Image (cartoon, rainbow, N blue to C red; front, side, top):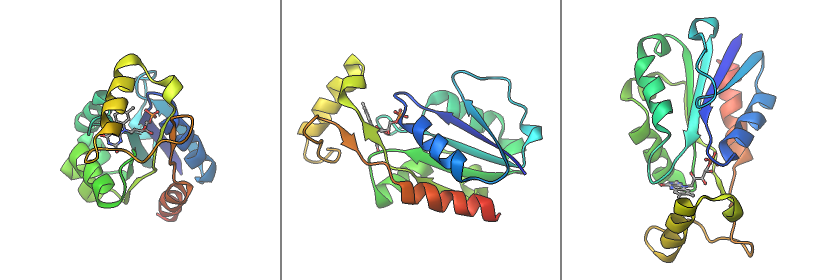
Length: 169
Ligand SMILES: Cc1cc2nc3c(=O)[nH]c(=O)nc-3n(C[C@H](O)[C@H](O)[C@H](O)COP(=O)(O)O)c2cc1C
């Protein structure tokens, strides 16, 4: 079986998750970062995995556009959807539902979140500003940063359960 993982990563966390996922998946796996690669031929793949990080509630615009543009093809594939994010449980799943088209949510064989990571020194000016603001707001706040001001909350167990479902279908 041929699979492709189409993803968007701003600071590298999603990319690292994608590499972990690839190592767990069976068959031929192609990786495609949506900002770098436009020449993918979806007809070559039986399984399509789509994922990206959430910023202020939203996934990467190009990833969303890709889903809408290829909806007709995608609904006939085995699709897995994921996000990386710092919200957990119901809030994380809600972010999946609001970011992917309903048609894909309905047919996806699995949908999950892989956790996330903020490495403070990597952040651009505005992202650092937002992170500082959010971390001061008790309602909006992300999980508490460590002593280096980083939040490292990737969930290998979620990546593994996602890979199992993709492999079994
Ligand atoms: C400015 C900023 C905004 C964020 N907004 C959200 C958010 O709305 N919801 C959420 O769950 N995580 C949010 N995150 C966490 C990111 O989704 C997380 O850091 C992710 O792992 C980043 O992956 P990437 O490095 O591949 O882009 C935010 C992070 C930053 C820096």
